[in-house]
Amino acid sequence: MKGSNGAEVLVGILAVSHSPRIAAGVVELVREVADPDLPIAGVGGTAEGLLGNDAMAVVEAIERIDTGAGVVVVVDIGSAVYATRTALEILGPERAERIRLSGGPLVEGALVAVIQASTGADLDEVVAAANGAGQLDKLAR
Image (cartoon, rainbow, N blue to C red; front, side):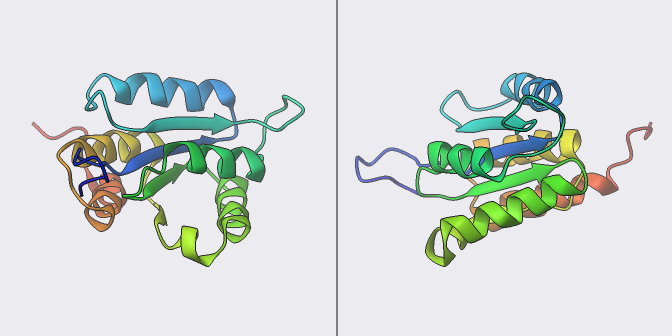
């Protein structure tokens, strides 16, 4: 997808974890293989600095990294899904239609999503890659 200036617009990747350290670690890891222009963010923890999730932090991260091609959100567990779904409601249907929530694993899903997004793949291709990461055989020889 091309932006208004003719430059390639890439799908953004957002990692949502209960832990800010885990979210930051996932971002650090995936940046190693990402296109340098790929919008990537991670959010974790509550507004009070505790383990948990903050829907408004998810909203702010989506707004920051959505350059027009959409955002794939990878999550760890439970309330990260709830916080992301709440964020989508806050964003409204027009913005939410450009966001995909992946059911794939957080680390592997983020990694393959970043690789796919870095090739210029569209939103549905990137979320499909993230979803499929749960089927990867890490022990294959």
